Structures are given as structure tokens and as C-alpha cells.
Length: 115
Length: 112
Image 1 (cartoon, rainbow over the protein chains, first blue to last red):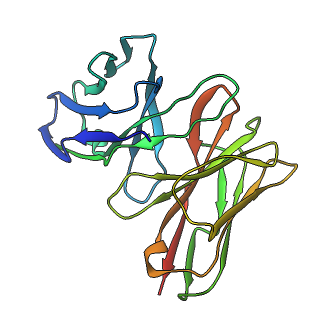
Image 2 (cartoon, one colour; image 1 turned 45 degrees about the vertical axis):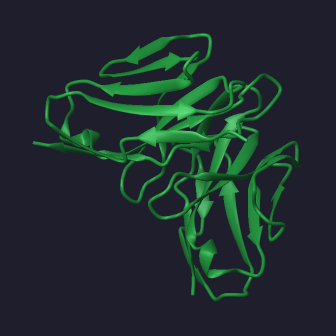
């Protein structure tokens, strides 16, 4: 089955700096890669996702890149703010038409943005 | 995300007991998946229901079973509870074949 590795496990940045989280996956059939943000005691919230036919996607201060050959994808947060402090999870899925997602998650990255 | 509700929010059970968790759908979403999230870890896929049938299953024993009703709502049942079943149980809704999964707020289960 799919296996997703996520690094680093913790990340401390100064407010305004950038944060980068990296994930690798094992199943070359995976074609959908979402990122979730989970604040303490709350639900995981989808913040951005990318499909295997796209190399990069950006939404305001967050961006995701995908390297299918190397089987890794990354989350980039620019101009970090204290409200970006949370645990971030990457996931991979063989999400095709006429099928539901079976998300395999990484172990999470705890991001702390220091004011 | 708005519209995905789970009940109860917290639950304490004794080892060996049985538990039923419930999840109501996000409007327009017909596919539900259940995940187990142990403390400090990422969610792990338990199983998925669409059209009232189990479509996919993760590496969880038969003690974990589920159901989806005609109104798309769903239940997760766990029999013979073990201490290791203590976790946050999340349901996630999506539209079949359209991706993007949205999570409920979860049920925190503690087995003592």
C-alpha cells in the first residue's frame, strides 16, 4: 500500500519568514495530493491540493509543488503569521473518477510561528 | 467545514464494551470515509461507504464495522474495545469521484 513520509516533524519560524514542509510517497499510482491544517482540538481543514497533471499550484500565501518523477511534494507558506501555527498534514490518494479517496497521511509537521 | 457533524463529541468507554459513532453529511456529499487519529499522528483510513456499501477498507480488524443510511448519514461501530482504540475518530465527506474530502470535528473516544 501507499506510504507517505513527512519532514520535518516540527518547524519553528519567525513571523514573516517562509516555511517549507516536504513529503514523499511510495505509490506511483497516487494522483491526488491534499494538504490539511489542523489546529489544536479541531478538525483537519483542507488548505490546498494538487493533482498529478499539475506541477505547481498557488493560493495567496501558500503554494504546493509536485515532482512526480521523484515522488515528492512540498508545501510552501510565505510571510508566515502567528495564525499559521498548527499541525500540517500531507496526504496522497489514488483519487480517480468513479472512485472515492483513500487518503494516506504523513505523520504531520507542527509549525510554530514566533511573533 | 460547515455541515459535517459528528456525535458525540467526547465519549468514555470501558475495555470490552461496544461503541457507535455517528456522522451527518455535508450537503450534496454522498461518500463518507472514517479515519482514526491517534494522539500525535496522522489520520488512518478505516473504511469508506458509497451507496450504502463498503467500497474500500484500510488495515483495521473486523471489530470495526460501519453503515451508511439512505440519507447518506453514517455510523462507525467498534466492538470489544481495546485501550489502543482510544483516539479521535473523524468522518470525511466527498462527492463520489470528485475528490476533495471535508472532515467533521471528530469524536474523541477514550477507552479505560
